[in-house]
Length: 382
Image (cartoon, rainbow, N blue to C red; front, top):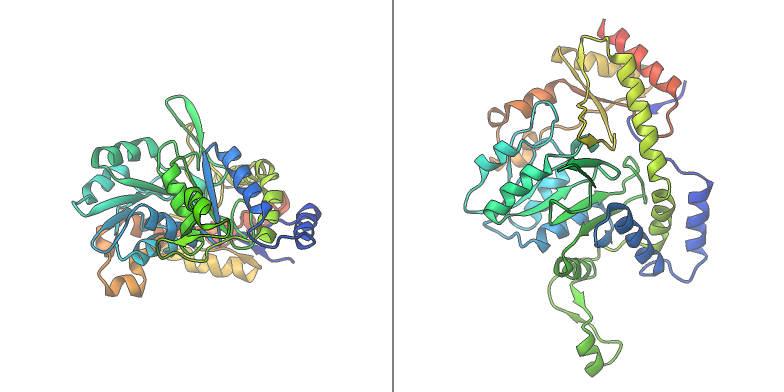
């Protein structure tokens, strides 16, 4: 009986050939495949600019720096996210402030964002949880009214779309944000091993992000003409957050298959829904005519929260490695010690966490695997 993990990469011979091609080329890093990968992401998302980075966390970090977050500032985000979202705010010295989730979508509730805004607020980081897009139109209206920067955490959502005013937008298009952040970790829509990217339509942000990626160095054409073609200047403290040509070659190959990947994820999610529609013990993930999810996760909510551990352990006994996404950020000791949120302030997040469970969902799964998961799940709920 094979192990079924909640998520994993899908690598085939074409991916391997692309990587081997990079290894045999003159460029292992800082070469043409980085530009090619960035251009492909721009074409797919329709954003003007893209900066490839070493991880989704690096992308969140640089986006927070680029928008000007500093000590004394605040940024609002969701408590149901991976730690990297709010940690990136902390890296700048700013304070993450949480707004509770919508109990149906599990995304940040726009109405509650407004209640958390103070004179210190500088940015909003909505998280497209499980690949289901946030209400970006409402969030943009809030940000424009208060002159706030929007950084979309789209790490779950490459391949997702949402409809606004009758027009469909891909996540990452930045039609309703200043920057969007992606992750290419092995469990995501596509993978580069580790890796991430930022998309934006703002030329000034793009130039700064590229510099921050490479130690804060700039090459100004006017200065080059005077000083020499080798010349560059470090104008601010940056980082080595570059993504290699080796990794980008894998990303190029993976991106060509993204449409098929998202289609397969949606097919598997639809099968879960069909097989679980009669199960009164659980609540299924949200659906909407105005959103097309990337189906990064298939999470269910147990109506009897006390059963979660026994269900989790029963699945594990049968080599089905489910997961819980996520422990609310404010519950972690580092955040609790610094009084960065308490459970009573976020009743929807707390209620969601106590009953949630993510079932295996990735493109390597077969319909028979989904049926096996559902059978064991239903047995465990009896």
